[in-house]
Length: 459
Image (cartoon, rainbow, N blue to C red; front, top):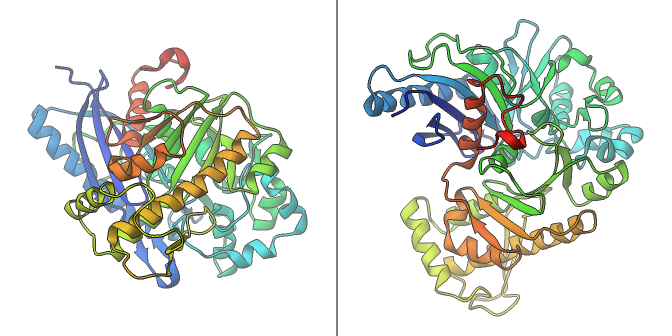
């Protein structure tokens, strides 16, 4: 039995997960706690830095206790890599302390800031950053905070995984795939976009030095860590959907990696970035062309908020636990994919990546929980089909798809996506992102390798 253990942390939109693996790649344990969001009016959602760190420390303590039970009191985690959601981060003041809460990527604030951008920035934004211009982008939330009175002079921005690594004792760094989610990174130069930084009112040191995913960033020296974690080597693994995509090893360029969390993301790997004009065209349909967690690779990232809509539908029909979800899943599978109602009896909207507000319009009587969930699944398919059509105009069509994430465990979800995606296969891992992060952690212990996930070093 191997005694070398590593951990991957996944800061997800719904839950914070830790997966501990051994140096043969076998999963040893998984623990999860709810992401400590604080909901506000109108869908506004924030997270205090202290709440996030308390959750991470509690999770590390749970993992330490579990390891002691499984492997004995001498079991140690030798390396930790942190992945997580993009767009959300922490602003640190000049003394290194948080001066504002993290704003969720799905928080609706920022429309005024989008409209107030100079025309020169608005015109170039998508082609230069690879992102569609909208309230989801980090820089828009930063402009909102600035306009609410937050002084950004002398401050620094850390994406959530970067903030956790720094708080555990690592050095502050800006990982490329997470920085690609901010809107501050010029995809062609790999440096901050000067005009946008000037509009925000910050200098280049607002962002710490850029690094690739998997770069060694120090050791875990924070107070209060379990003995089995103290001294572990630290790194940032990168944006969660991209880390999930590398969890299976080499990922074919002609495959969709479909990460099914709060957001459902279709990802394609590219050997080089698409040109400015193509990035601009894709952004019109909320499709990103940004840097991958693997150096020298880029990705197309097409997202829909289907997971958010499915979760809200479950709550709407009174389903709040796994047993209820399984029962609803079975009820949906008893119906044909097209459902039992007449076409047009139920209208659904909200899955587009610039939306996220579940809207159900009932034109007839008789719709039960299974009918509503089926309608939401079909609506998700419709939005995904639009994204696939747009991507197929820019790159050769994909020939297969791999589904990962929590929603992929539902038979009704898998059946739905088989209607719109080619040659669907489902991952056999329960936590692809956390496992992918553990691969980055493992490579910290083998510094002879040039990068955790170069082709010849994939597991």
